[in-house]
Image (cartoon, rainbow, N blue to C red; front, side):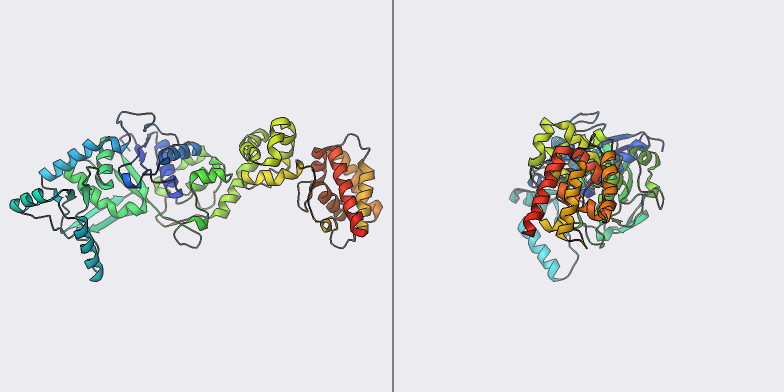
Length: 491
């Protein structure tokens, strides 16, 4: 690669950044970083009708959350400003005018009503959809008459009627399109705004983009773009079309497969490093076995040659598994900082975060290996913060136990630890483990009753560490409440 790499992500602000767009941004970013190039952000906001308020901010925030910084863009500028297409209209209008003047494009005067009737007729006759070139070869007299009658006209590209357009895709190798299958598409709309086809070609040329890496859905547009590059006298960039992302059932990816926007993943408690790692594997791989990689390792090894042309599978369960691995890698302080927003959103815990941060911090190491998302954390530790536990009394009675045996176990446990000093995990184990043998019962029965009594749950963090964090006063109070539950049960 002799020229400096210049790659871009050019989203339309038509909603929250979706997972396919995230993958496109990531692969462009990785490619630029791998080869010491530049990564550009351009906002393609020429489809005014579909623009959604707040989308641009969501794009910025989503990329920043993922750690995908850009070298040039709308907010920081660059040598090819502006980076909003809506602020570059004169460039597209000038290009369209040039194409008309040199005979590579023409004005089309067809009304929306006529175009709709044409489409219906094509459907009825089971013909491929496309413009019928009604205005392509008008005589000067006919064109003059249309100009006088028409209030709105568009510019269409004059596609070759025969021959082929071939190109080498960096992922799919040689791709061939028959020109006869491509209609005369619109370049400039009646309101003076360009279509995607014209705007992206003009901008990619003027911004000196060397590689266009985009989704497979744009593959069929590439011959149109190459012919536009040729007509405008531009040198085309290299093209690489990324594979589709499908659900585990190989159907189109959707919400039911767990697909969400970047903002939603953040709100669901996924770590940016997890999504970065996971999305890098949707189409690209280092080998046939490596799944967990740091950003630095992915950048170092990324190449277009290792992107598969076959569809990638999005597996939400794998994403959750990977997120759990990344959570376990966090230091205690990182885990606390990452969880803080979720803890503050929980009414039972929020107050303690403010008044007793050290207590909150002491609970987190007990659940760090059990959380698959940060959103799991409040539920996992909530029992540490409630005044009274709510659970069914029968949970105190382990399988193959009676209420009387459970009561005896809790009373003995209470007596064994009430004067314990220091009240820590090591001393608790020294007292409670031999107690089971003294009572002639299984340790699982004793520990199970104590676990439910102190946490309100049958599944909780390690018992002795949990009781140590709860402290003697809380632990004894909860065991006493459980004893009273069992006593009332036996009345």
